[in-house]
Length: 499
Image (cartoon, rainbow, N blue to C red):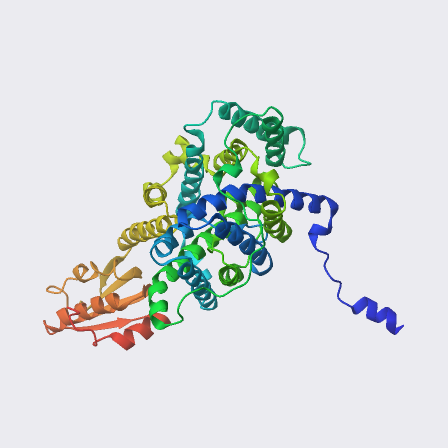
């Protein structure tokens, strides 16, 4: 009997979804496709950072493996990225690889600290129009990054790209048993090798490593001067990496209709960068392009695809380097073009949408896109978009404060009713909505339908009472809600220059 009861009460262990044969196949193939797409990207970002290709490839391996375990967003891909490469490039050029690695490790530590402080909660303040601008700018950057591979190349590259595009557009209509990008890569590789077609290949992008990454400490003096030197770069790595990762996680949440743990993702990115630094990698963050390949093009949904993308990457470049080297760049370019087209929010720029959308929302989206394209930095674009949205919001709300008044039957008291949210933008005009000269001896300001948010609002109320007092009249502020009463009680009469 006891055994039966224990069997009933014993909690059932949930079976990982990737143990399903269908899901497992999808995750494995998706990881392979992403690994193939990561190789030229990692090499390119290494060149951008001014370091050996092995530094970027090892970073992509360690970032993917660690984040698959520690991250909060399943199926999202993290690896070496262009944004991080741009930040650390000056440090590597002027002081060498050791200082770059030290900056990545410190940047990871900062990300862990920011995660503990709850930085992920700031995602709620990013408006939808900024998200749309982020996605559209990203799609444009992904496409633009492919253009150099299409210029000054043999003419055979163009029909090869066309064949790959046709496969990726047409194959899913026939079957989704295997990812179309993987089929396109295999078909083009077989064609170019069998026909001895001379076109740019992955091997032309740089030397592939022939050994495993080795754990070690950065070769720098462990002094305060070193920390002072690398601190600005480490902070840049931390902030840009977190912003891109959290924005990408939110995008994947929307695509998959699931919710991820942003705080866990934040410290997971930090742990991944710390580990990457100790294995000689250049650091990284979430990669929107590869994530879209994994989630949208290949249909992956679990951590297994992320983990395998890193494992396959290492196997491909170390054990199968000669095979990988002959993959034509035309295949990978075609994959990224499909990703760019699929990532762009075409609905957001449709004439019907633009006609219905408030001008301010469109301005925020355009500002975000413009800032990203001008700086090639997604983080700067997001910041510019958020600041623009804040200014537009403040201007809107500033005009939503309304003041009405009534006179008591005995005409000895005038009651003013304030409606709206009082803060630095909306409280500026409040002082001018009272009739100081003609009002009776007693004035009551009813705040039942108002809320006081900041010191600027308290200063405005102080200015009103001061103007009435100068005329020998009394003012009573009533019906403040609890929070408004607290800030008013603390600051009223203590703000210099309130009038």
